[in-house]
Image (cartoon, rainbow, N blue to C red; front, side):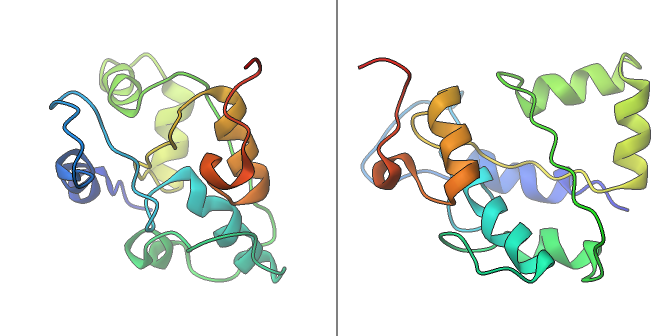
Length: 140
């Protein structure tokens, strides 16, 4: 399966939210098909369940996977950026992940805002953004 990061990463890095200037080092969430927010709806689709939330992942991400799934495994590495993960893979530090990327699919996704663990996990469970589910952190 392919590594989609050369095609998808430049688009993610160039994506900006109107009216917000965060600087070049910040990556804006891309809720229209390239975010962890899109995983629940995609997984529900693959398993034939009622969708949870918004849009599915982009067709560019989904098409290499096909439609015939028996198992879906989601691996979440909290607080690990995609670019750091790639650097570690290129340095040969992550042999198991390199093999999984070759045999599976590697595609960069954005997180959500705020990108706290509490908000992101709740979005993965509900398919909704933090603005909708209201869980923005462990303490308020």
